[in-house]
Length: 317
Image (cartoon, rainbow, N blue to C red; front, side):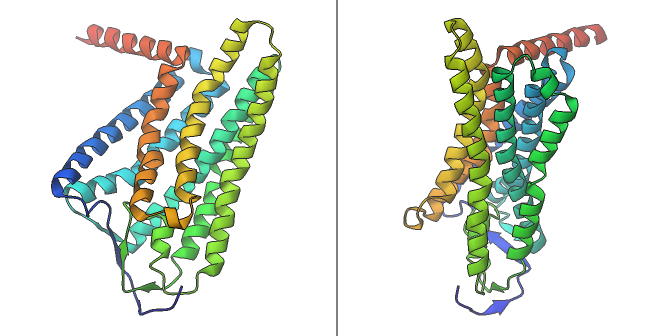
């Protein structure tokens, strides 16, 4: 990037959806607020029910609880500020605020990639080694796997954010996005960013491809194991335990890959905003819905919890 007029940037302006008419922005605010509340409620219910219900104490629900915690964090980083830009036209964000938002966006994004791979490994052990499943996926193992899933987000987010915000910025401080993502902020830098761009491309490919390959390997082995099952009913039962996770993985990887791996010629800022909405706003809402609708154990646990709350309320009243 060619060097231009440098200045000390103290804040950025998030362009968000400012090009749209006020009426459309109001409708978007109502839609995103509804999605945000559903996301918080749905994921909070998953956390509550997997903690409280004794029938949901298997490793699968331990990792599902971690995913819900991650999705709540992901939403808290992005959505409140976006809602502010839509309804109050509060488009400014401080230099530190932008760096903090980017840091946690990278952290939660990387953690989700590896957590989805861990959940695929859990399904592999459950289906391919059912007799050894309780021994292999004991309490200590699941905690270590969860920690290993969350940990890569720290170094990736620390290096990426610190490096990017150490560059000098030009007088232009308008970020053409609804949050502080790497590429739109990088465009405001007045310095040679070639090394950083190489690092960002290689890092993104590794962060996406390593978990993706682990997921593909796990499900290849799962598919081979399911095909060996003679009973059609048992095959369906085995596949149904994976279907929710497969759908969640597909939603996350398809939307994020379309955002970051499309050719620049086909990657306009407006199209990137729409694609970013899918995995930052919509997918976190759909995850608890998918696991609730496609998993009888979760549905039954939610029903039991609901009836317990009603019974407690009647007792108090």
